[in-house]
Image 1 (tube, rainbow, N blue to C red):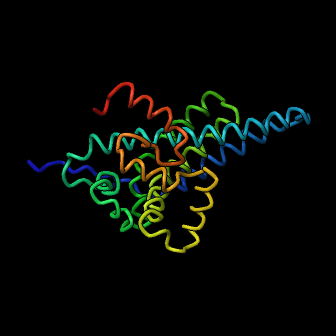
Image 2: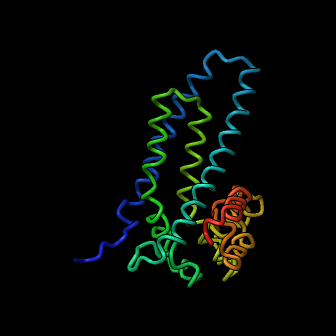
Length: 218
């Protein structure tokens, strides 16, 4: 019997912008209804809620990326001929991810597209407020870009960036703490059992605490 191959590229990455477009439309419709006949005070409260939605979406994307990272590091490594090359091979060959194209890194993430779709359907059924829908948009956007952020982190660590607009943007965002820094991820490669989240590292204190106290990875 032929051994089944784990394939993360079965879902085309083109689905990611399609899903985001659908979520944006959902958000626009809901926000428009909430702003009808709104007072100045209610508008201020609504704006604060939108900011909370953005922050919450980024935190959740970081946390989920950490959970996926743990699974890939500790449960997918033994599987031969896997397509999750940048996940499972990045400890043995840290520079390997630099050989992956932008299309490649998004291909490995596209298989997670059903998650924001399911969240969106749940929100639609329960008439969730706009900030929750915005949080889902931010979650989908940053989660989908987690491997790109991971790639640029290694690019900085190994090549000090390549001078493109993309790496310069990464440098600005990492300096602002919106995406993980190269130093933060370098610690993961040295200590291995810490700093798994690979979007911005906001959820690392929680994950590091859980891993340390439970000994789940020992």
